[in-house]
Image (cartoon, rainbow, N blue to C red; front, side, top):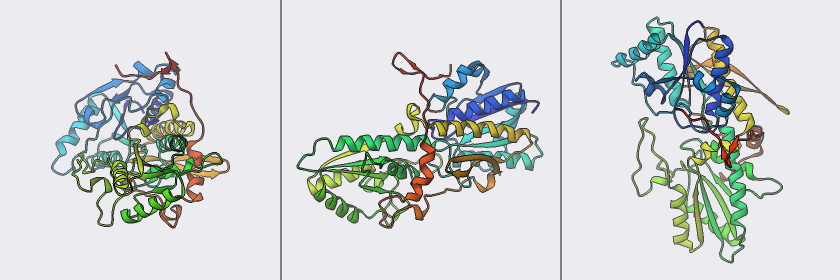
Length: 408
């Protein structure tokens, strides 16, 4: 590449999305790219010509290492939906106008399903109008729902946080051994795909009995059956911990969290999920008189860089790095995928795959990894997920708290 490049971040942040930016930067510097820009708040900010020069922050090894340990989206994210090309050519021309203004020949976009759609539409527009600029997708999502790739950067760290927190909640909930059982409902992110909630299964081990039940959105949620299960568990033990996806839904398609109330909708038409644990805990308390507790991990599960998986950090860096190397080879309209090559020991490589097979396609937890009763995960899931949460990268502590790299 003879010109400059730009990298952006989009959608919900992860604990390791900044490691992908570090990977893009490191590879571009190695190739001698003149200037490496960072979009401020994704493609939405780019359309307003808002960028920074990443060299100001990452010009030495300390900056890159600090970026790897910084949560959320260092560059700033967005949930901006690019319009359909037909009738909105001016929006697309604006993107290319800004790229030409700054001599940017390749745009790298780190994100999930909706972000990959942005990469697809920009590369399609470039191809249709004989424009030389290239566009590469860098996978990112704690939801782990992008197709083709074995798994998504961001998932391993979120899964590590979930498994660790569930273990701690189980210990806490069992502390008192009260005569009246305590039912704890833990709500975990996941609208239609239950990958994050499945990670609760990783809490189980020789020092932890694990969750009493795990409910994923891949299976219809029967509230009456759920209540019967809770009563049966409460009759046998004093501490009950249940993990439930925020996106569990009843037979008619309604999410449990929206029963009896209105929910907000974002720019992509996605319903804003929250309140499933509270709704279920309140119902249990009202119908049984049992003590209940509702816990919602919310953004904590995607922001906990202090508990990030080293495997996840390294792979996030690798997909950013390899996206640049693929662009150097002339590739465009593609996303870097993680390709598992072995489990014992765990090995994973990368490749570049056509964005058209990835954008707007959602991958769910396979049926064979969900137990027959619909309340747990099989050993097949654990074999898949356990390697992704391995290893740690210690934060750089200053005055007792982790140090972060902050944009000026």
